[in-house]
Image (cartoon, rainbow, N blue to C red):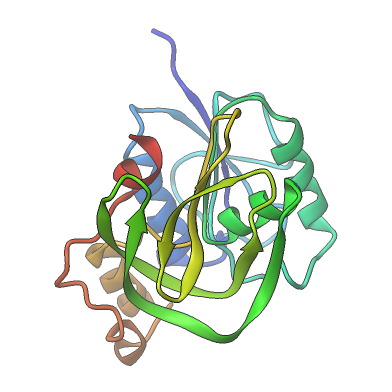
Length: 215
């Protein structure tokens, strides 16, 4: 049996809920892949108990780039390595939040600091006419998508979802891995207070990783 090799560019590895549990949620939508975890932004990561930690990208069949507490608008040297991976690798790539932003930046786009942060559930309107609810939490936003085509917009975020016209790349500004379970874990583990979590209306049906990036 051929097993998919999934490389997660794991940029919240220092956080137990949004890192460990967020990656677990992303991985759950793949068919029992072999998981590799690459965190070029830090030497101090949470022990996930799954996946193989690597110091550099490995040969793989798929790449997932997570969110981050860092900002593309405040570029750091390690981001060059991620951008190079995006530009050169030929396998499918998905990007979430920071992942969405750095993919756009690597492919000729532009990312800017927003005047205020976005932390709420908002509707995303897709080009095919579908409307979904999604969890947004970000301060940077893509203002020029570069090579990417915009396929989804939100009222506060005109470039909320993208795909590449010729390469297997899909990105979203929102967090489809942010389920109710992960928000509960974030509170329990101290990644987020109950007050901070309370801004997200999770009574709505929220789009997930499979629906937004893998269908």
